[in-house]
View 1 (cartoon, rainbow, N blue to C red):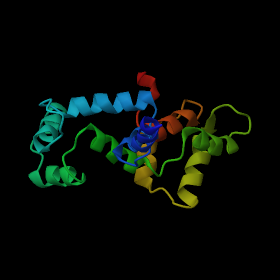
View 2: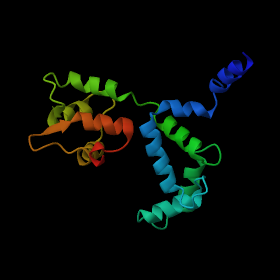
View 3: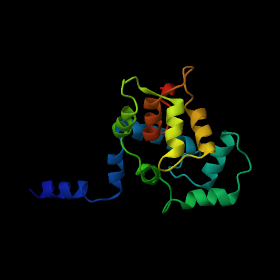
Amino acid sequence: MAPKKAKRRAVGDGGSSNVFSMFDQTQIQEFKEAFTVIDQNRDGIIDKEDLRDTFAAMGRLNVKNEELDAMVKEASGPINFTVFLTMFGEKLKGADPEDVIIGAFKVLDPEGKGTVKKQFLEELLTTQCDRFTPEEIKNMWQAFPPDVAGNVDYKNICYVITHGEDKEGE
C-alpha cells in the first residue's frame, strides 16, 4: 500500500512535469527538436551564446547583447528543456484548442467548405472586437494567402494558431 501512495504523490506533486500534459507527444517532439537546434553547444541549457549562434545560423548577425539578455531573462533560471517547454506553454496558454477555433470559423462557413471569403474575413477582423490594424491584415494575407477565387483556408489558420507552424511542411 505504501508504494502506491508514494507513486500517487509523485505523479500529482504539481511540479514542472505538468507542462508535459499541456502538449501531445508530437508537439513535445517538435519542441525537443527546436530546443536541440537552439542549444548550439549541446550542453542541455540554452544560454545567450546559443541564441547568438542560432541567430547567426539564420543570417541575423550583430544581435545586441541587450536583446539576448532580455530573451534569457524571460526564464526564471537556466533554460533546460522543461523550462523551454514551460515558457511555450505560458505563451500558448491563451489559445483555445484547435477544434474550438475551427468551430468558430464553421459559423462563418455554413456550406462546410473549409474556407471563408477573404473580403468577408477581412471586414470582420477590421471592424469587430479586437480590430486588426492594416499591418496585421497585410501580415495575415502574407502568411495565409487566399486562393485565386478569394477563399481563405481557415483550417490551416487554426492549425498554425494551435501548433505554431504551417502544416504544408509535413
